[in-house]
Length: 442
Image (cartoon, rainbow, N blue to C red; front, side, top):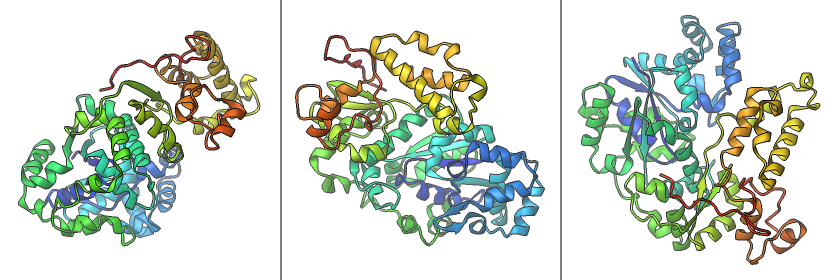
């Protein structure tokens, strides 16, 4: 039977939805595994190709959820885990199924559900491990989710930084959910307002008959959480729409306007009102919630000028593992992969300033295809993304471009060496940056 992955932004209703599904006679769901978040592809492949099942047991025994052992949360002792893994052929999927499928089987449920919100960022890896997987995504007004995230110990206390975190997940997963495929999206607000109708639609998609027990989700919700996850207690209570719009009265108006500008493409796509049209775009590469937390001056300055920050998708690979695993000594490119990558990226960025990009994307500059992919990704924003100088100018009260020592003295928070990378095209005239494309992202 097709495994079901429930995904979404933190504080979007994933626990409530998983609890409702777990109240169905066909579905069993345990706590969040964070399996694809807490392990790397290299670790999973090494465990699947090692001395099975001991290698898999070693990997699974290292996984925890809020300080509790994940294998124990799923009811496994070492002997039981060994038997469960030994009965399955070695694979990445078998390791996760040893937790999820066996948990559902003990409850007498033929199908299993895995609910980890941040698996939204790992859909490609999940599809590779489970080609027959189906995905259920729950959406909530991102402004409500961002405000509610402030109650999480691992999120920011900044409303706008949490908006950036939400938008990163949306942008990264958008291509998958826009293409035809085994996925279903519903809105949290619709689920709370009319749960039976929404659950009937979902059950039809999953190929199961609707069961009224799904509306009595409180008991199943307790199986989805640990004692340390106090922020999930709301899912054990009866449905209530009381806190849906709390953000409207608790978030300062200036931050609400900035969020309405920043989030407008997503607000429009999912039918949430209040989005603000932008007069221009400010595309950015690599803007994370952590960076946004310290660079709210940039986001607020952009909002005041009716400029919408547009997050560009991250590359299809993580550069850090490349640094660790790529041995370049045989290619005579430097002592470490990191130093070589830094030199290549520096050469690429210098080429951008001169408008010479093509020669930095030739195979001769990339000994392996993975590096070539990184360079192509960096070049994808050419002509669309703002330059570092223009970003600094926007974030600084001064009307002239400020760089180097002058920038640090004008605004201590802004250091050109530490500012996030905003790659862009060459200046059109002396002292001015190329104007970003004034198109609206969908």
